[in-house]
Amino acid sequence: MRLQRLSHVIAFAFVCGSVVWAASVVWSAIFIVAVPMDPDWCLEEREVEVGPDRFETECVDFKNMLEGAKYLHNVRMRNRNRWWLGFMLGVGAIAGIVVFSVIPRLRGLRADPESAPVGAVVGILSALLVPMLLATVLPPPGKWGPAYLREVSRLRVEQAMKDIRRAVAKAARRGAPETSSPDPKDDPRR
Image (cartoon, rainbow, N blue to C red; front, side):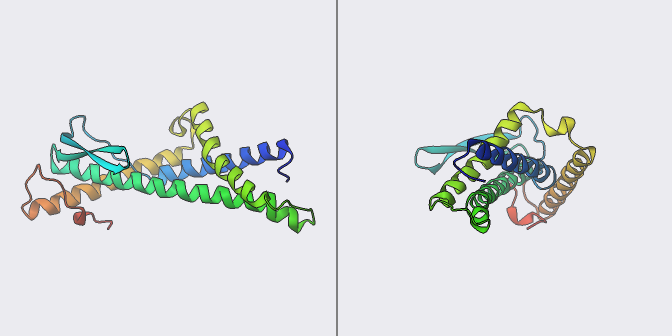
């Protein structure tokens, strides 16, 4: 494939972005398991600075220890999703370099010196923008996706809730107050 041909770039973007989107659907169903929270789960919030002129709201007092443990679990899942996004952008960059620079050289075609970095940028943009476009245009995968993905996701949520309840019960046996924040060390997956 050549960067000079718009049809090649569009075809690569569609294929790369579709593969990243499909992988993200599977990853979210299996490894990013957010548990549902009660509507009034947080009693007191505060803003925490996470960067220059960037703030996030953080709960400091929970309705009960179970809701606090759910919150910590969901924060870990959000962080896991950030790692997944970085990994998929890296895969897009590598795919762009391979498709637009390495393969043409192996086929004996003259590749421009800037084909590797431009291919990496095209790959990153494809891995970022095409999945966002597909997620906007298509209905949520839970509505039309394979039943086994919905079942796996449901079972993972149930298992996460069992683990959270077990950690809360362990903390309660130690005598922690019911409305206190949970101790992240009580998480059985750590």
